[in-house]
Image (cartoon, rainbow, N blue to C red; front, side, top):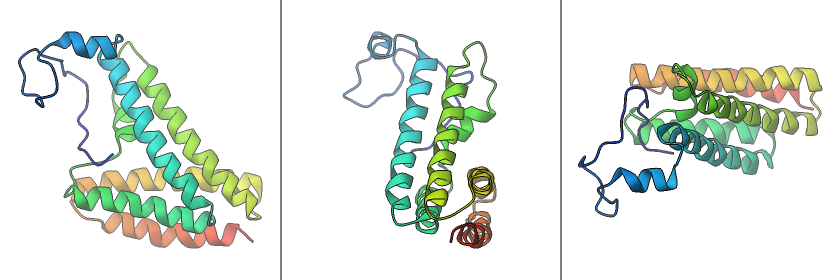
Length: 177
């Protein structure tokens, strides 16, 4: 998840472009593994990135909602700083692109965000939060984190993520009993 994400819009898979030595110089291998072409490749990449972040979130939420939130925010801080603010969230990148004729990558992004919200909601509810409040707060967490990641990339600074962390932790802590 730490590699830089570039929009698939306007990109093509081209024979002869620079590739790792283990990748054959043929678009045939790409279409062998991804018969749906670029859109299938993007969809699978989004699913993988979302599942990877979701699995980490789920593991960390076992220690409670605040601990899970801290780990999720620390993940994004590490991704941003390790990449010198070049990497971001590929799920967000797909969400803001024009989907063109194939809406599957966008649908996969929506499913990913919903999955993260469900994990957060369930954890808060398991720790005594009101279900409606937990659902709204989970939406706020995902939206704030994704927005902070975008702001951090644009400013080349982790300040937005730090400020979001400072605001979200007390909200989550207050929601659970």
